[in-house]
Image (cartoon, rainbow, N blue to C red):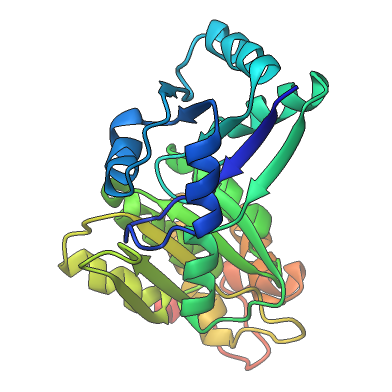
Length: 284
């Protein structure tokens, strides 16, 4: 009975590979690669000649069955395009199937874009949620963000360049313009960059600069025990109403993100005076 090894590979810089990972890749009977062409670059660099077979989200069910048969004969190493396999890739299905088949599953730790971005962000790292890729559809993306808007944990997302601008717009709208964040681009690669600031600042920057490369977003959690200022609440309400939200829905979303009571926010949405006694009608 063979063992399934989950081998972490570099997310950019080819020197970010462990000695143990190289040994496992050399000794395995087979390497299951998300993209054999990408993995071949790493194997060629270090003289690893183990046979590869592709295994990705579009692989037919017969490929999973073939990998389980291979595990009956020897060890199999699973690798993703980059980073730790099983995070936002099809490795999860193979891991479950291997366990059900009575095989050992062992991780070989190494590079992870999510953890690299987190520790470089300057945001709290003692408690965090990794949420993978945001939904493609704007309505689904906004619902996902609304569901975590009051989460006090640091949030980590992956995003592709052609959706970064719309994602930042939705993040600013749902979580508030002053929420602190870091956008990490091309981690460990030649054009690596980590840009920190408020969501409003980051949205403005990438509105003026074309997003290029692979992105990991790290977002500060909701401010536990702290309320937004009234001006911030009014601004968030105004944005949501401009986007077509009803007063009730806008109040619910903003209340969850701001720490205000829903009734207080709803009164502001109707133009009634807030705690400061100021009406919202003049800010439309």
